[in-house]
Image (tube, rainbow, N blue to C red; front, side, top):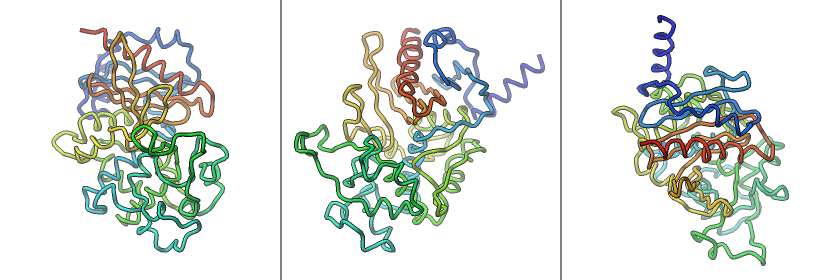
Length: 352
């Protein structure tokens, strides 16, 4: 009895006010039937109750997990904090004034001069940067070969549009999606320049400490700048707290850690990111509308290589974390999305 009570108290402490429950969803067998590969954790919280928590392949509640590009959403949230703290006026602030020491630049253009942080965070920036295109000059794998990531991004050429494609203005939302890690990395660098703090330290004091998250590891560039574009190590239980914070519109307890309007802006759609899934993109958050039992369930996610997902579903008062080490595999995203859309959501929707 004492061991059970200790486990319960540890769960309550780690989840800071989220009450613990047994696996009332009863989905473990359904997850196994999907035969997931390299899965490490699945957590589900609804109405502030932890309904499911399972670990796989030697992972545990104490294991740090590299969530890759799901980390981008941390940078997006911290930009909202930086606005609140007065370091930026708005997401419409232009990028280049923060990097005057890098000018003059190669490939000058009006598009580059007028580039805003909104363009970077919404993955619609005007530079030739596309991680999903191995031919792109701005592909992140090319950035990692360079010492100065700021110089790498700012000296990219302005991107064009193939003549067989709709113009940018003709595309959904009037903007063209191109997934660009370098643009988020530059946003992190700007936050550091504006605040005078490393992004890792700033996020720790402004967010993570308030959520009782003690162990978060951020990678750095060769020049010591926090990599806001990916690669954070964090425990799944701590990651889902970030989901709860977003679900609560930036409020934790009695404290508004992130402005509510920033959360709302972050979850809006600004471009069509994956037409085949009807997916759109906000400010570092994906929007996936899943069809479940004849209903459309709007889900928002921080997502990363390997099949790492933090889901937020406001209409169900639901958050979920799925972590996996299936890095660079063809099945990574499909596998995690199947667990969420074919197992978790139907079980939740079918409950009274």
